[in-house]
Image (cartoon, rainbow, N blue to C red; front, side):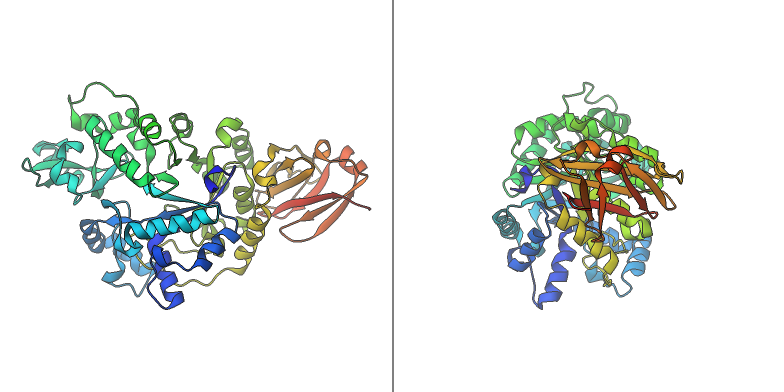
Length: 496
C-alpha cells in the first residue's frame, strides 16, 4: 500500500477538471466510478504511491453565486479560459456544503471505486479534510449554529464583510466568515468554533466517516485550529466565552481516527508542532520559497534539519494554491524538479506539473484551458519519475555531500547529496545559482571497491568514466549550467 512506502510520491489531481478532461478524451461522461483502468494503470506506471483527489465534496450553491458575481474572479476566468460560461463556474471546493461526494464524482460509489482501483495497484487515496470552516448553506448553520464563531450586531456593523446574518432554528444569528488572520475573510464560508467541545466532537465524527472511504487526508490550513492561533484570531469576537483553552484538537483527532495518513497544509514555522501532534507529513513551503528567491546557502541550511523532522516534510514546487512551477522557475526548473523528486520526505506533484502547464486555473472552474505539453519539461519529469521508482530512493539512506572549489569560485552555488542502499549509490548535484558553476564533490567514502567508475546521468543519458585516484584525492568533478542538475543513478566499477 502506498501509505507504507518511505519517501512516497503523491500526485494531486484536481478531481472535477480531471474528470472533464477524461470525458472529452473518451467521448463519454466519466465519473470516478467509470474512470478507465488504463488511467489508473498510467498513474501506477509513472511511480506514484498516493493520489490526492482534490475537490470531491459537495460544493456550496452560495459559494457558486459569489464566485459568479466576484469581478476579480471573473477577470481571472477570462484570462485563463476566454470562452468560459456560467456553467463552468462550480464554486470553491473548500466551501463544503455537505461531507458527501458531489454527484459529478459518482457519489460515494465513485470515491469507493477510485479507492479500490488504487488499492488494487498498491496505491493509496487521499481526500480533503477541511477543519476550519464550512459553507454558509451547510445544514449545521441552521441546526447547530453554536458550532460556529458567533458575533453580535456591533460586530456586523463594524465589519460587515467579516460576518453574515443567518437564519437558524434558534432565530437569527451573526456568524463570522472563516479567515486566515493575515488576510481578508473568505466570504463564502462560516468559521467553526474550536473552543466549543461539541464542534470538535462533530468534526472528529466527520473525519471518521471520511476515513471509511480513503487511506489518508490532506488537512486544509491545519494550523488555524491550533489553540494559540485560534485564540489569537477569534478571542476578540468570542470575548469572555470559553475562557479556558481545551487540549489541542489534532491529538484528539489523530488518536480518535488512527488508521489514516495525515498530511498537513501548514505555514508560519508550525510544521514541527503539527508533526508532534500526529501528522505524518507537513507542507515544506520554506523549501519552495528558498528555491525561488533565497541564496543557495539558505537551501543547503534547510536541508541540514534533523532527520526526524526532515523525513516528514512534503516537498513541492506547486499545488492548487501556488503558481505553476514551469512559469515561475523557467530555465531553472530542472534543478528544482530534481531536488523535489529526490529529497527525503513526501514528494508532492500537482495535476499538469509534469506536462509543463503554465496557467493556474481558479479552483472555482470545472474546466481547464487546453495547453500544449512542454516536451522538455515532460522529458525531465519522465526521467526523474522513472529513476526514483527504484528502492534506493525510498529505502536507502540520504546525506549531504561536501562541495569543494574547482577553480571558478562558484562552487557554493552547487548542492550535492547521495542515496545509498547496500552496494547501490546515487549522487544528485544541482546548480541553484545564476551562472555556470564547477566543483569537486566528495564521494570517495561511499564508493565500493574498484579502480575506476562509470557515472551515468539519468537526466541526459551521458556516462563519465573517472579513476579512483581522482575521486579519492579531489572528488567527483562536475560542471553545471545555471538551473541544471545531474542525477547519477548508475555508479558502477568500470574499466577506464
